[in-house]
Length: 160
Image 1 (cartoon, rainbow, N blue to C red):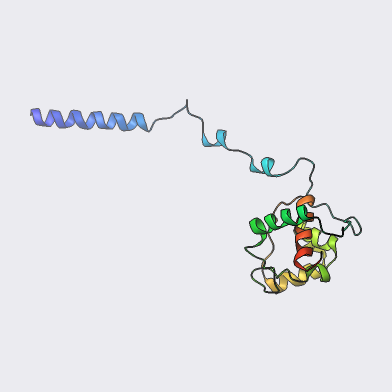
Image 2: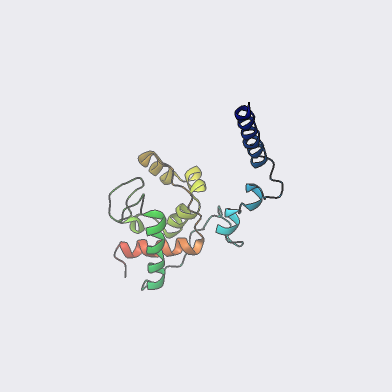
């Protein structure tokens, strides 16, 4: 009888602890309270993606700006290298070799910053989508970042 009472008491205590530990923690913040809006952190207040870059808006410089080339290389290595190669080889997306000879600076920068707009309206971008079969994801690059990538592409194509 003492053994049964001891087991029942132990089960009651364990059950009580379980109920208390799984109860409503009103004092704790919920996960929703602690989340951070990543889009606010990653997008510049002044930058509006989807704004078309017009022909002639981009002024190329000769010689190339080494700081911009270096910045473009860093962006390429972080955001572009997994899909694009610096030669003609197509990986997921087309290779970059010769792209600055085939396309205008505004076309390249629009493709970098405004992928959706380009795929909706530009026949060449639509042909690339048919060839590669994968839509290029928006990397949320600013115009300044896209300009650095363009300089890196020009450097890759042998411009000095």
